[in-house]
Image (cartoon, rainbow, N blue to C red):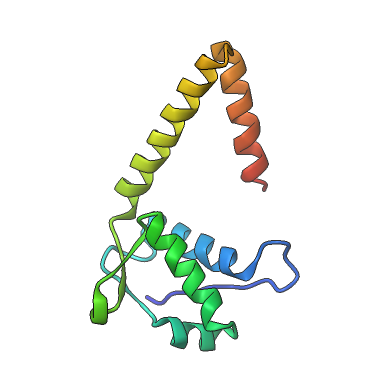
Amino acid sequence: MTLKIALDPDAATAPYEQVRTQISEQARSGALPVGYKLPTVRGFAEELGLAANTVAKAYRALEADGVIETRGRNGTFVAAAGDAADRKAAAAAQEYAEQARRLGLSRAEALSLAEDAVRAVYVD
């Protein structure tokens, strides 16, 4: 099993975001198992034809999301992302629901707005 990233230079999405999204999806799907060692920032950047700062930015975002973890000089590994991602998403949903209620939105209005937001982000 290897990490496979396909960059689209014509995409409106920034390269670091393409890297972040694909690694996140592969980790969540199990294609990259927990404990899988990711390539070094420099090595991966060279392999992808990107600047090291671009890959470093993607790794920082993935680490902030709980998808990967850096273990000092030992490297960067896929973390148990499902649990961390689920907890963060649930906390964000809870915060949204509380804010919507404080604003006086009905349950149907809050759900409709949330669905619109999800639809806008998950464009197929």
